[in-house]
Amino acid sequence: MKSIALVALFLPLAFGAEYLVGVGKDETTGKKGLGFDPSSIHPLSGDVINFEFRSGSHSVVQSSYENPCTSNGGFNSGVITVADDLAVDASGLPSVKLTVNSTEPLWFFDEAGGLCNQGAVLSVNPSQTQTAAGFKENAAKAPATPATSATPSTTEDHSSHASESATGTAPGSSGAAQTSPASNAATKDGAIQFAGIAAVMAMFMGFF
Image (cartoon, rainbow, N blue to C red):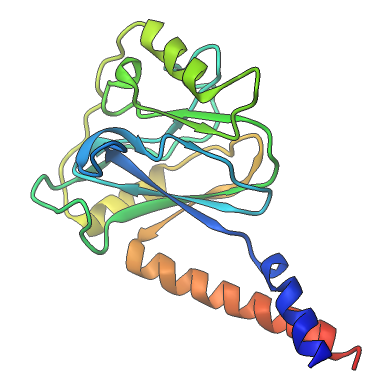
């Protein structure tokens, strides 16, 4: 019983949490719309941000607190276009994943929509001095950015396109973007989590 209790205690260390962020989804209504849902998150080191794309053309581009609507040369998902007739909660929506390896603030905007200055921004680990509200205020003051176009295609093609286009590694994150339909992503994550659980169990069972 003691060994089981120890395994349960350390299971959270085997894998990070996953934060699902809707791109092109209104966080107030939960429907297709402007920005990110949620627009502010606080992941820990080792956690994963899963950007899931809704109808329209969208992209997740890293910026800075001072210049919210300008790429800083870091993470870029590439433009992903999703058919307008897909429901906001449809299965198999294209997604891009980013692993966070610190708790330093990270800042992102939707460049493809050209709506950054209207509030299409995401704050990751905002601080007391650099707040999510302040980031949105800076975005509202930024010049309007033109929308980036993309050729419409099927959901599967979006996923393939993003895999080829996702570039850069955000400071405070690790690895290139991983892109896949939501169903495949869940399968892969499940395998990784199972492996992590098995490793922790093996480690602690060795003490008994």
